[in-house]
Image (cartoon, rainbow, N blue to C red; front, side, top):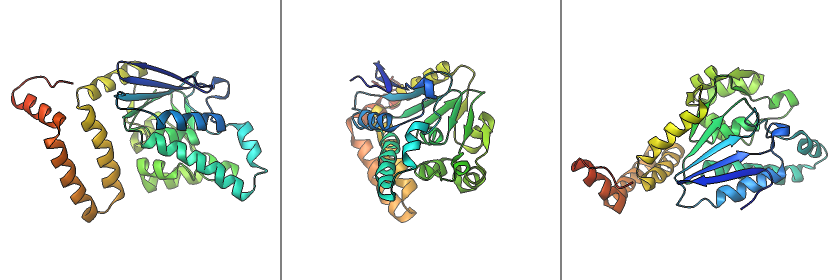
Length: 254
């Protein structure tokens, strides 16, 4: 399907999704938000991995200024409707059944940091720059906060949310916002995809669900889920194939 603000290309089970508004540093507006919701809501089982990237020199500058200018006159109810749609975009990316790899070049600011946070694996260039600058505008990084705090923890969130300061790739790596800094982003992304493809595709998807459940429940509720999850995987066709291949010192069928 063709989109106005996104470029998509699928090859060998890998779906590449490019934010395609380079003239505004891939800042999102209501159209991009709607298209991203539609795209990520429809990702099927044939997709082994999604690569999320930005066109041009920067990954994502957050909210588009023209879009933000309309919010100034919004009522509280209109702001709630608008923010709910934005929240849904982050949720569908975060809950994408296939692993999402963020290819982060240049700057990721405000809501762009939120997109980095919902990537399962984020790889950035050494010149990457980040900022949660909402407080500079008198507003909050509210909708993205569950995902950013989940990635970097409350301590780093306090320092970065409250000051709105810019930070570099080294700090992003140190606090856990990104997982790797690489000179050659394409090579690093390709290596990650190769690693994912050595794993059972159903197991990878089940792992995403496992992490989400365990992270959001206390120990007493998490343990029964983990017992059921491993039992289900052991008796599954893929689990049986993988374990038999390992025990027989053979290559798994995927």
